[in-house]
Length: 91
Picture 1: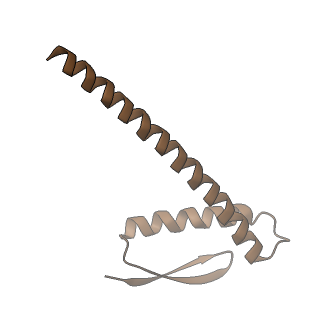
Picture 2: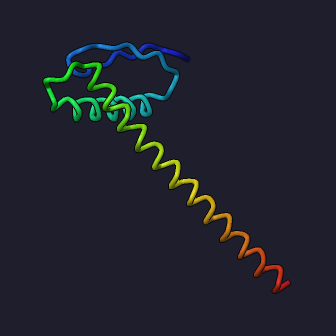
C-alpha cells in the first residue's frame, strides 16, 4: 500500500510516495542523505548543484556495480558450463 514518507535533507523536507518496505525506505533515505550531505561539505554550492553532484556520484556507483555484477554472472555461467562438461564426461 502506497504511503507518504517525509524526510529532511540539507535543511529541507521532502515527501516520498512509496510502497516499499520500511526497512528499504530507511536504507534508501539514509544513502541519499549521506550522499547529499557528503556533497554538502561544499556549503557555498546551491542545493540543486549538490543534488546533481550526489546523483552523478550514485549513478557512477550504480554503473560500476552493474558492470561488476554482469562480469560475475558471466563467470558463474562459465563455471556452470565447465562443471556440466565435467559431469557429462563422467557420465
